[in-house]
Image (cartoon, rainbow, N blue to C red; front, side):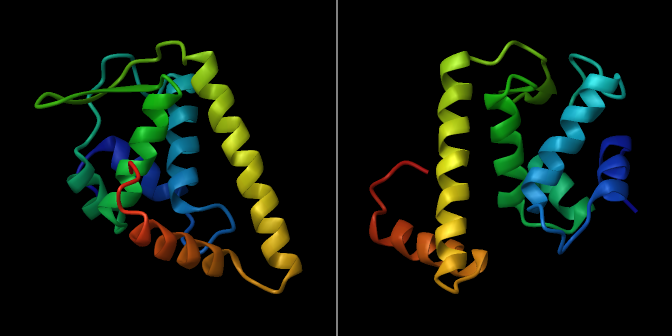
Length: 138
């Protein structure tokens, strides 16, 4: 059983194997909890490690979700202090960059499907390319 209310709420809404990636489901669930008032500004979030254990997902999945929520202005992280609900306005330029990236990814997925590849094939290829371009920021 998850160790706190945030993990409990996420565990109830998470659908492993669903069309939406787990990272995206976590981002949307936390966003909805903040908007609906289930999470208050300043409320501490579970650590990446603890939430990954509670949800049975990779720590990298939680880390990516937290990073995305920080970019959206929903969470703020302070080294050594933790991650907290912040609900600060997202930087419009950053938001636009993410929208552009998401649109390009959707195009890539559509192109890959038309060639007979799966999303997993795309992810595997990107992972391989990432390892060959290890000087790129992560």
